[in-house]
Amino acid sequence: MTISADHTAQEPAIKDTAPQPAGQQDPASEAVHKFGITAEDYMLPARHQIQMVGPDGTLNPHTEQGTQPGHEYGLPSDTELLAAYEQLVVGRRVNDQNSALVRQGRMAVYPSSHGQEACQVAAALCLAEGDWLFPTYRDSVAVMARGVDPVQTMTLFRGDWHGGYDPAEHKVGIQCTPLTTQLLHGVGVAHAAKLRGEDTVVLAMCGDGATSEGDFHEALNFAAVFHLPVVFFVQNNQYAISVPLAHQSVAPSLAHKAVGYGMAGERVDGNDVVALLAVLGRAVKLAREGSGPLLVEAHTYRMQAHTNADDATRYRQDSEVAEWVAKDPLSRMQTYLSGRGLLDNAAADRIAGKAEAVATQLRDGLGEDVPVDPQDLFNHVFSTPTQQLKEQSAMLADELARDAAPTSAASIAKGSGK
Image (tube, rainbow, N blue to C red):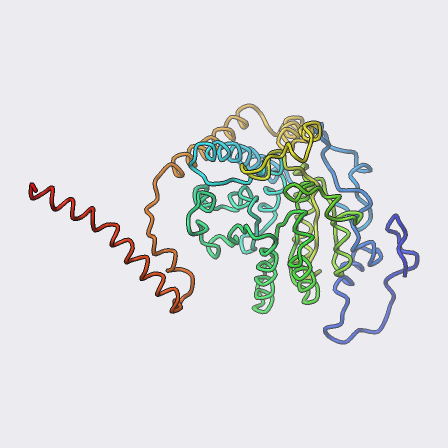
């Protein structure tokens, strides 16, 4: 079997054969037969990225949406689209508010997702209540769209000792700053859910730079071998901090990496929330039905710097940024919904008001002083502290006590009139 440059198989990939022994079934066979295509055409992404609504906010003709047999998508419902738009508006306002809070010193750092909000909103909305989301450090908008309190979501970035929210309560992993580790966490949860017989799908998010990490390979390979219900969602925003994609990978696309693990891949316009809802929604559905893991690559762009500590002008041109401004997911969706008569001024004002209320909540919540207990450095490392931690804790307690002693003595002396 060979595959041509346009992804077409040179001979049929699926043949009627005797049933294979248990544990040796081709994970993609059922989906392949259902779509009536070859295994290669199922696993390889469509020849063109899926895009339903163009940058001008109008619906593309079906022939220009990038679909082909086995890679066909229906439009999400109007209810889904309006819910997504609301989260887009809230997400954009949160990104802008948090950038201001960093400048004011009320947040230590913030990796803005300005321009990537469509990916994050779609990732959260395509999941059922019992599913799990594993975000990256840049996916705060996805975490909030999953229902986590805004101030709890940002606790990590104010420099607190904990992640801010209970992962088990929300079924959202703590945002990871180590690169790619969240994929392994997501695969572990999916494996546990499968062993327990639970109806759970995991969506694990990462960036383009993460695909060069060893954890990426280990997560995808394990998920494929054990046929786990995981959707790996790569937000290709063109840069791994300052390293452009061309210096990271020479694969035709990151979605093409899926076939090497025996799973299906797809690529989608990451600034088209309509297409994202359709593609991710189908991927989650296929994973839930037992088709195994899938990989979705979204082409998007990080409009602002990597974090407030980064100077993006050192590695990219303003003209490049301006090119992506014209593809903005928020304005695109607003134009599309308005053109269809689904978004009037009253609805737009209501949504803008909700976004402003969230921004106010963030300002008020992150402006409060948080009591600090230095012993928290040791209290939550191990369930049973090691001897070394006990010694370090005692040393800190002694030092704090000595530092406080002169103050106490001065207070006593002042009270006695000496």
